[in-house]
Amino acid sequence: MGRRRRAAGVLVSLAAALPLAAGCGSSTGAAATGPTAAGFAFGRCDSVGDAEVAEQAHDRTLTRTITSPYGCQWESPSRTVRTWWYRDSPLADARTRAGADRATVADLTVAGLPALTDRNHAGRCDVDVVAGPDVVVWSVDGTTPGVDACTAATALAGISAARGRRSGADTTTFATPDEAYPCGLADESTVAGQVGAAGGVKVFEGDVCQWSLAVPGGRADALSSWFVQDTLDREKTLTAALGYAATPLRIDRDQAVTLRDPKVPGDCGVEVQTDSGTVGWWIAYRAPADRSDPCGVAATLAKSTLDLEP
Image 1 (cartoon, rainbow, N blue to C red):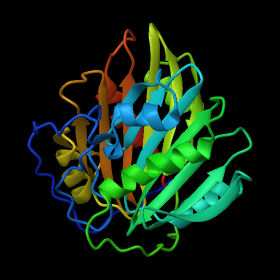
Image 2: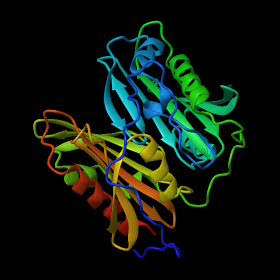
Image 3: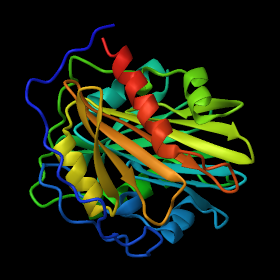
Image 4: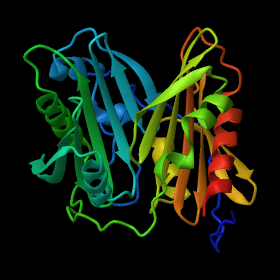
């Protein structure tokens, strides 16, 4: 299908190496500085440390398994905790998704900000908190005796939102945009094929989607993002503040950047400017998996998404 194009080009000017922000293993979880748009301003892992996640989830065996520009994931044998930062992505989108999943949905206030909580029929609880055009999501699933998933997710969302809220941030719940493209328009077979996986499953769906994949020698995770009112300029500013090294590139006619964490060579992402916001893919190979070419995989998946954009 043909693709619409943004009339004005987007300048790409990030240096190839940028200073690292403090890791989210810190107990303080101090927010990064630098974002120029309204909304949240987070450090890595949406400004919550590993120990805090374990404490609020009542699971000291949780281990961080994903660190990305969109957020983080922690896993234990009985529980998974995720957080994603949706940039320029309305809360109304979350309400629509929750209704489609036939979840129990309720409005609440978290850290003085509008929020939405939904629990699906499998017991997972997501809490979405809005500040201006941004949403931060905390998701808790699995079972821990005597620990309610929504209680844990709400507590983590409160810590995150309080640290990430910018002074004077608008609390308006923005309207749903006219266009939305779920999960990079990619299905499991497409993602698995590009990553080199024997198979995989989609484990989270929202403005950030996640696939867990079985690859030779281990596992890999693929994340896609489609922030329909976002700009590449904002993504460059935010990821620079989070410590990611950026390299400019083009995917067909579109301006894009490759993002890498200098300390984690097996992970790589690509962000692309389109006329429908920003499209991103992040690939993370878990040791001891074959870490062949995560940047190439991310770029190929981004091109596939753009080719399918109506």
